[in-house]
Length: 305
Image (cartoon, rainbow, N blue to C red):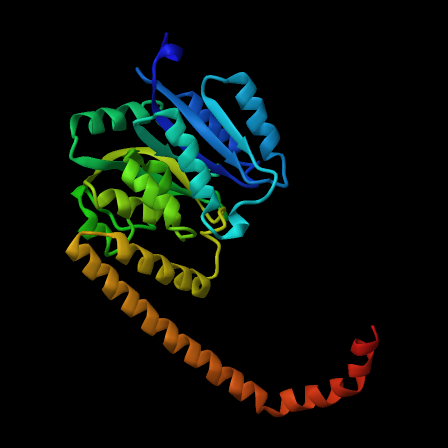
């Protein structure tokens, strides 16, 4: 009986207000055909829609697959790496050898996805990450297209390649669980994008392989990260790259990270200078002075109320 076997793969699944997409995601889990046991650790971060109810439904129907975590306080908003710690601890307790990823708004399309990727990693011990081609679903139009948001890296790659830019989509990954990497992930604190940090830490310990099979759908425009403002994103990325620079051991990868930090920092300094000049112009404009004069008599209302 498969239920009596040790768990070989743990699925890392984060959920927050994913009600419209969650059934697609979970059906991709339950339809997997494997000769090993796998479970899905599903973390609901106090969703305000019906996501938690859907998780309970699947956990009751498939108790051998779903391991839900229901929070009473939103963890992501703490910005302290709480989610990473919670998920790493939960997965380590399962004793899994590999970890697959799929957030609640994405989904797998190939029922043999896990089997194919685990077979590769079992037979190639010098590889720590196996990912694959996928398709992107544009939420605004409903159009499904071949992946386009990342560089097309084929076959074998390394941490040196990954340090120049991220070319891995989250729902395509199965990685080898390495205790040292899990410990680093828990200790680095809040990092965005967190998946890139995970890839880099793993790639520092082994090689990366991309399968040409298209086996998942990545939704574009549905997640918090994919819809964040570009300036805010860049500041987060600079902080993340700085943390990675400290812990990555590969010299060439460190050099690429340093170059990226320098390039992005200079770009942001230029942008801040531009904003300051624009604000200075506004403050010295006739319209601004007129608006201040018009609003001055009403200041007493603000003090009173």
